[in-house]
Image 1 (cartoon, rainbow, N blue to C red):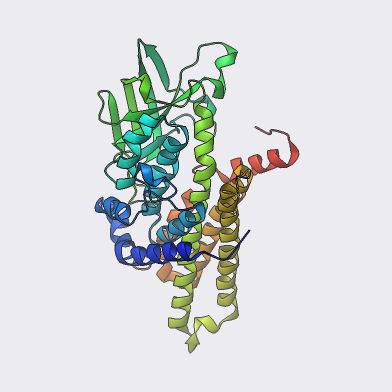
Image 2 (image 1 turned 45 degrees about the vertical axis):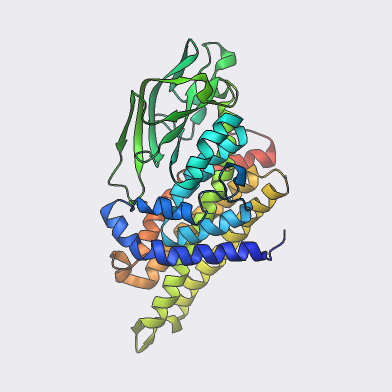
Length: 387
């Protein structure tokens, strides 16, 4: 793996850092308190090409490789994980799925809208009763002539109240065992303004408070067969392929959180004095800071390895699980250590580290819990499925 950035990648990183410092970081605390990111950020993200990374230019994308994508998400995660989530979902999970599995008509219709910020997407897989056990989802899609009627509910959907299109996974198979579990699931691109499509914002979250998170309900929502993404009964593969890359996105965002924690802890330790000298001179404070730095470097390299595998056409699903598992847990450790450096001041939202801890905590839960990723890694190593 080449660890030296190309000129183009370095320029993308610099652009993302400058954008984060100007358009995100100064407002992150206010957005967190208001439980709402300013929606104007979507067009700003699109304006610098961040919603089109890795998407071909012929469909409105800005091209680039997956390492450049990771560099951008690290910077966005450093500024505000809620903003990083907008990009991870609408681009990483939805637009990339359309690019990978869509018909030419679907690509021409949706990709220019998604990459320009004209439309946002959400990834509607998780349900009230199925999180880790996604293959047993209950949402159904029933044939009605040339259309499908989709009925069910989805839970904890990022971008849910903002999205213009939902990538919905629904059960289309029959009752026999050949249609059970993942074999009976199909993916659909569902416009959110259709009759019967409802959404309710979820507020009062511990972290990612500025992110638009929703419960979705679908009551016999009618879509044409042309809304189907990929083959009938193959939707679970679409979801898992999206999540394999999506976990890289989460890992990159966690690297950003850890970096923000390191920056904040180093700065505060140099300013805060106790016992007549800056606390940076105390050995145990240096230990806390050093632990953050080591975790940060390891998480970044594991994330970059995933991007390298994707670019070289190598298998990357296990590597993505490794990166997501380590980076998410590392982000929690980093935030906890940074809060310890700040002491009591870290516990109030005048300072950023409390928010970092709250935002980091959910990273160990979504797009596969840490426990699920340990089982995926274990299955890869032993060939035995433990779930």
